[in-house]
Image 1 (cartoon, chains in turn purple, cyan):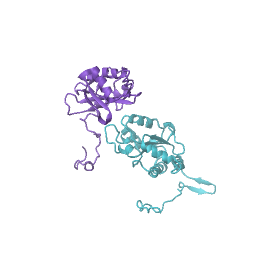
Image 2: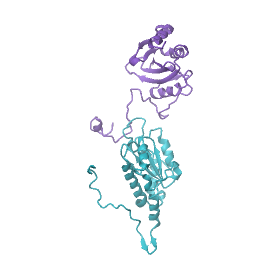
Image 3: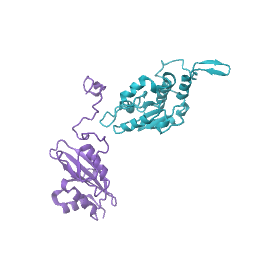
Image 4: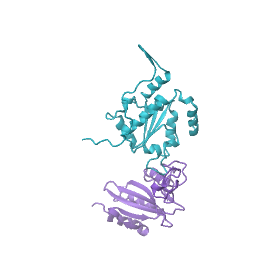
Length: 173
Length: 193
């Protein structure tokens, strides 16, 4: 019997009860939210269960929601069942003041660099990561660029014509 | 039916298609000129480029090296990837801030005399990528001789830029550039010994 979203959702709620919330299916992809302490347990369950077998981590990324106070940073895991071609998305929310999330490196080796990238751009601290340092930006950078708090443009430009960028008529930002 | 030419129609009308040789005293079976000029001529007609191709401009460079636009006829038959053996560093493509020290290292390893061509908008000024991760122009880290604007510049535009470098090499440079004060002052300003 082919694996469907209902079966996956049913098994998750049987095992974890109402700790997992926000079940929805945008574009046919089952999405749910887990509390951040349980992220490893949920992923381990999805990995081990003989019917579910989500053994491939497709993507691990972060999102910054500045309006959700208390859980601004989200870490999103995309898991894939290669045998039945089924995908599932798990979201974990954490506070921006103490953004600690357990690392998935022990379970999925590909999470290593993906977590480094999430740390580089959002500042999410992955507890237990073997080598958590910046991977795509210069090492001396002291801010996290993808958070919605910082300007996008390089601040060292002095020759920009503001009029062309719709900002008024003076040189410089 | 080809389109009529719209641009650059006020350019020089007496363009010589064959460059004249250096001035000198000609006699029967001999030609006397100054060493500067001969060396400049030889250098400009056999510039070996180092294609530091990072992104799309690198593809334009590949088109340039192909048969249709043939870069080899300018003497750049042998492109090298070893900085020690090349005269011209062509930086083609977006240089990220993380790549900056690499470009500087390649430039430092080049043997004198060396010239730099910034090809494309990204190498000249950061291009459309005005963001935290892109170096806004390689002239922030190395001295550049010729900038070729465009995104990407057509091969003909690169050839135009290259001919300007040839003119620099041939006519305007003294034979030992590294000992001139202007050059040393330039290197000082970039922090290069």
